[in-house]
Structures are given as C-alpha cells and as structure tokens.
Image 1 (cartoon, chains in turn orange, brown):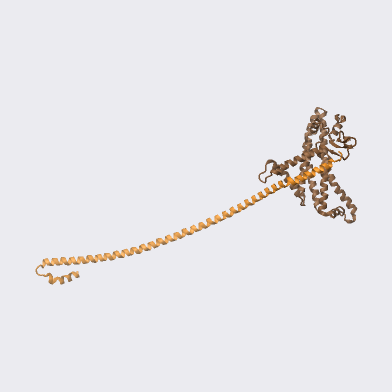
Image 2 (spheres, helix red, strand yellow; image 1 turned 30 degrees about the vertical axis):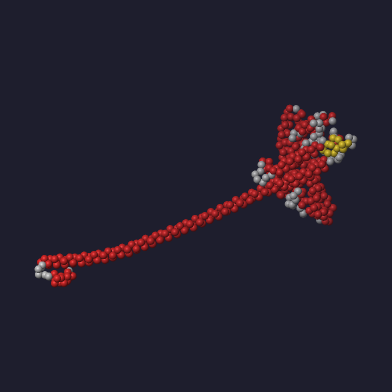
Length: 156
Length: 280
C-alpha cells in the first residue's frame, strides 16, 4: 500500500501505451471504419440513384408506350379512311367503266342491228329481184330495171 | 518468512494484500522485501514488481490484439475479431464524440487505452484469489498481488498522468493567464480572489484524487471481499460450500463493477480533457 516508484514506472508505461495506441492502432482502425462508412453511404446513394433512374426509365417507357398507342391509333384510323376512299373510288370507277361498257355495247348493238338491217335489206332486195326475175324473167331486163330495183331495195 | 507461512485469518489477508516489492532497503540494499515491514521501510525507492508485471502484460495483450487487427484491418466484411474490436473502438469513439467538444487526436486513443487496459486489469479480480499466488509460491515468489488496480500506485499514476495532461492542455488552449484566471476569478469575481482560489484549487486537486481513489476503492473492496470469502474454504464443509456460492454470486456482481469502473475511469478522463479544452 506504499506509494513508491511504481507510480513513476506505471506512468511511463501508460505514456508508452497511449503513444503506441495513438500511433499504430487508432488511425488504421478508424480509417477502415470511416472507409466502410463512406462505402455504405455511397452504396445507399447509388441505390437511391438507381431507384430514381428506374422510376425515370419507367416513366419514359410509359410515355413511349402511350405515344406508340396514339400513333397506332392514328395509323389505323388513317388506313380505315384511306380504305374507305379506295373503295369509294373503285366503286366510282367501276360505275363509270360499266356505263362506258353499256354505252359501247349499245352502240355496237345498234351498229350490228343496222348492219343486219342492211344485209336484210340487201337480201330482201335480192330475193325480191330473184322472185321478180323468176316471175318476170322474160319481160324484165335486169339492166334497165336495176336502178328502179335498187331504189326499191333502198326503201325497204 | 516464517510469520507469513502460518495460516491465521489476518495473516492470510495481509499476505494477500502485500505487493511483491523490490527496493532499496536501508539495511539490505536493493533487494526484494520479505515482509510488509521491510517493504514499508524501503519508502519511495521501491517498485511493486507484481503490479508492474501484470499491468504491462495486460497492456501488451491489449496492444498486441488491437495491433493485430489494425494491421489486417479491412473496410470490407470484417472477421469476428475485427468486428469485436471495431465494436469497442466505435463505442469509445461515440463516447468521445459525445463528451468531448474540442479537437484533439490524443483523446480518443487515450480513452481507448485506458478503458481496455483498466478493464483487463480489473478482470484479473475474477481469477480466484489463490490461484496465481499459489502458483507463484511454487516458483519461489513470496508475494503476488495480481490485480494492478488494487494498487493505489497504479490508479494514481494513471489519474496523475491524466491530470498533468489536463493542466498542459488547460495552459495550451487558454494560455497561462486564462488558466490562472479560471482558478482565481470565479465563481465570486475578482474581489474574492483568495476564496476563489481556495474553492477552485480544491476542486482541481479533487479531480485526480477522486479519479484514482474511485477506481482503487471499488477494486480494493471487491478484492477484499473475495479474500474474505476465500477464508470460508478453510473453515470446513458447510461454510466452504457456502463460500463457493458466495464467490460465484460476488463474481457475477463484480463483473458489473469491473466494467462500470473501467467505463467511469474512461469517461472521467474524457470529461476532464473536455474541461481543459473548454473556455468558460
């Protein structure tokens, strides 16, 4: 229980130990702790940033989809309109074409009818002439009466 | 000597409370004291070999373990030991940050050293009181007090070192004038200077005294009770078994004291250092 040199010896030991701790133990451990703290803080910040990035991406994607949808809608309605137009045009064309065909057919029919009439007339005239020739074979000179007969055929 | 061999109760207690002292005896010169009387005759020129030995061994244990971790320390995933050490370091760092407002790189390492070192020295109290002394007796060593903090030399040297640092930082931060002003100009103003000096002087001197004696007193009393309990073992069956229970119960309670006193010693150190850095 005596106070003696132990006091001084222990004080020296204390100083050396504190010096050692301050020099070789505290700084590296604190450095590691701070580094880890920083790493964790950075990680959390990065995670938050990633979250925000993801949300932004999601938002962009939503917007794109929305745009695409409206564009598709537009294209579809344009196409429908165009389709209707095409059908209408085709109908008009077809009608015009039909009219044309009808007109052409009518004129052809008329022409053919006229030709047939002409032929008929010629044949009737020939028949009439033939008949008349047979009936009047001697009295009628075909040369002198030809003009009269052709006039007759023209009137038929 | 022969008197210390006899197993009387008071002899047993005294034997346990005697340090292994090496010093300059008036008659024998530099030698190891063979009795309490010889040790006290040596006066100041003596050293307690057991206190020094155990405190240095425990201090080196602390430094080696912590240094081992400090060398291999990683900021990645820590191992079990590093985790444990980091836990202690973080605990100290928290305390320093909470109580110490100045900026000084010395304070935290000092607090760490004091806390772990004092804790280790206190923990020696939990080793049954006869084990190491009996072992030492086999090696021919007469006295062996294994708990350094039950030696007032140890606690006072720590407290006085802190006290010297406190004065040093007081003067460094506030200047000699500032420090003296703090001692003499408050709490009653400059016209009551002697009274102020008296009051502040007592409060200043009480700091190392209470710092050292609090630790010493708690541990000394704890050690004393362990010794008294150990006495029961030599008094027969029934009391011996009771002693076993008592020792266990006291050890459990003492774990708390051991930890608490180490913590208080560290916190007081931080607070004193904060006072030295803090201008009123």
